[in-house]
Image 1 (cartoon, rainbow, N blue to C red):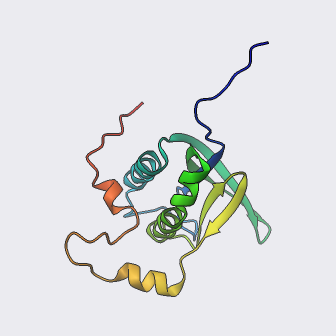
Image 2 (cartoon, rainbow, N blue to C red):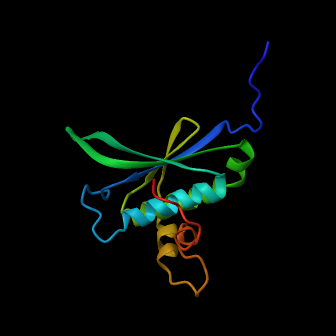
Image 3 (cartoon, one colour):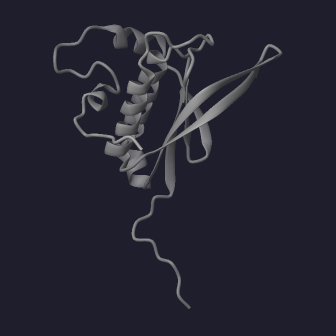
Length: 153
């Protein structure tokens, strides 16, 4: 009897849920959402080995009102070793994106569980500090400035 034997196990995954509105339900305004989505895709591609992007809708209930917004889900499957190696980078990326999107926290699904990454006041303070040229100020800066093309589909 024949059976399928994978060459490489990628039995873990990370998915960033990127909002289309600020935490106050307002339009993003000055935020270049496409640039942040592109940076997230590059992060997943370069650090975890691949990425898939899906457009969707998110709904939540608050104070008797149902809110809805478009979300972009950037997802990557990876090995346990890659996930362990990049836990800090995932945390940093999520906290930086939460600040850029004007959110209290950013939703990141890891292996079927939803985590909410919210930068504390110290992280926000340090994030706002000027950095010497060449020093990565943001968790995603090197991915935005990467010359690795992510082709449009």
